[in-house]
Length: 299
Image 1 (tube, helix red, strand yellow):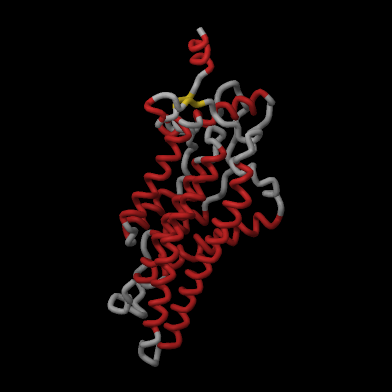
Image 2 (cartoon, rainbow, N blue to C red; image 1 turned 180 degrees about the horizontal axis):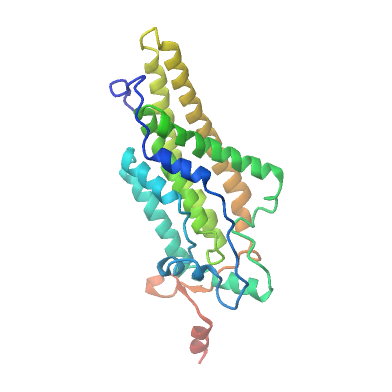
């Protein structure tokens, strides 16, 4: 990757963007817990709180604060075209898979209702998710992956903000999708595939961010002696942040997601599969087998 010395302004601070207002609003807004309606003999209560197009594929309503932040990042920062395409295409693939391959989790939801069990949440495969380590881990991920990069978008020079923006954009999109997949009508395996798929793709963004941060730190050593120390310290801190994100999210993908979470999602007792047939459309497209369809075939 070419050195960024020709484009980096060492001390030039950009004016605060509208992102600061959004971040302040998010910080001040009280957190509200998702309310659960009493279970009924239908799929779930998700359809009562979402638009029809979202409910048709088993999605819940998105967090209201995330779309404005994502739009601001996409508009004011240099988010690559392929990152934008992936952020839209991969969630669409998950939604279509949930609708046409897993029947919007109808089988698992029906069994849960028959047993009279409340919906435990999308991360029920973490049996130890109530232990202190999990909350510490999640807070560390929030500060390292979201909080500090958001501060860069508001306070850092434009080259630094642009370098961190693509990974932040994809991570926020992943978080938004995790919220939207949190209802009982989305199959657990696809819920797990969301962070896995985004994390695999984000490794490329992390590598790009790390290389850019290194180049900026090297170039910062050539600044005027009067401000050289402060500049070097700033760009060194930026490099440490990029390196920390690279190490953290690589561990999160290779260990926590693939080795700890994914195997539990393969448990058919917790996440029963839908009855599908591959005998149509030249064995290329799955078709959900309804009980009425099976009865017609027997006759």
